[in-house]
Amino acid sequence: MVRKLFYRGPSLAVLHDEYAAHGRIDREAQLTSSSALVVDAPAERVWEIMADLAAWPSWSNLEIVELGAVRPGAPFRWKLNGVPIRSRFAVVDPGRELTWTGVFLAYRAVDRHVLEPLDDGRTRVTVEESFAGPLAPLVYSERKLRANHERWLADLGNAATPI
Image (cartoon, rainbow, N blue to C red; front, side, top):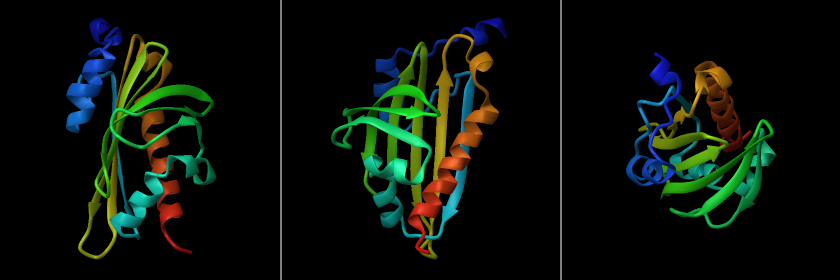
């Protein structure tokens, strides 16, 4: 239990190259979460909204601080609830997956966003994340992690669904 409390996880380079770039999160991380939502829009529309990070502040509680191209290996900086995060895209597969690694202080995360087109023209969006670092469960919680994902999914669904 104490060992798990001080778990740091793999280096950021390994986490990025061997986990995130291969569609995996760190299952050993102290905090992991997976949430899904079916959006009443086709995958192409959901992707268009999801991959336009510059527009995220118009429909979510995230702030984009620095953004270049949305492509594997490209860095970006953003804030979640005022917390600055440095990230780098690992997977950019249009219409299917957007995954990145992120770091703030001594904490490292993998964020996966996977789109699954459904037969009825809707899209299942799954957000999966691992969050690791010393004393991570004392700084954050799976409940908060899941709540942030569910809020983001709801906001994405609202942005992608025509009124």
